[in-house]
Amino acid sequence: SQKIEQNSEALNIQEGKTATLTCNYTNYSPAYLQWYRQDPGRGPVFLLLIRENEKEKRKERLKVTFDTTLKQSLFHITASQPADSATYLCAPPLLNAGNNRKLIWGLGTSLAVNP
Amino acid sequence: KAGVTQTPRYLIKTRGQQVTLSCSPISGHRSVSWYQQTPGQGLQFLFEYFSETQRNKGNFPGRFSGRQFSNSRSEMNVSTLELGDSALYLCASSRRQGGRTDTQYFGPGTRLTVL
Image 1: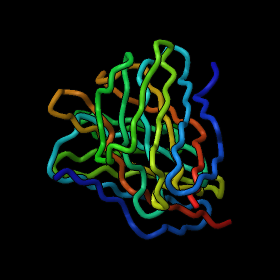
Image 2: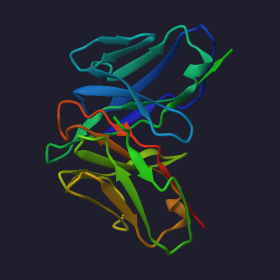
Image 3: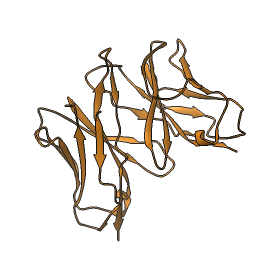
């Protein structure tokens, strides 16, 4: 069955460093992949979408890559700040038998940026 | 533009009771999805409605049901509550269902506690 895997262990980094989060998917090939940020007790917030024909996408300090051969997406936060501390979720879509898309979600990686 | 709203924000029920949660999507969004989130399971997809029709369904028992009204507002109902139903229930709206991208805009969630 289709599966999404993200770094299960929390990531702790020093302020100013680059955080790199990994999302691996198996048994299917999504046409695109989304990354969301979630703060405790709140709903996820959309950050970036990358399509299968895009190798890399940037938005301010954020960068996402999409390697369809490795079946992997990497999410980078450069010059990290304590305010970047949150859980980051990877969500590629899955087509069902009726050709309707639904997002399937990784468990997320918790990032803590220490001042 | 107002965001996704969910009511109530917090709810305490006892086993065997039923509960109805409400979600108002962003104006112009016709798709509403519901998710259950627990610490160990992450975001679990319940169902998605578009134009008052259920388009996608997750792997939840029949005790979980939903509906969508003509103004795109949605409700979900859980009957015969069990302790394991304690979770954060999130509603998300998107502009199009099955479209080229399905960026989800989440509400703040309803925290349900079953005693």
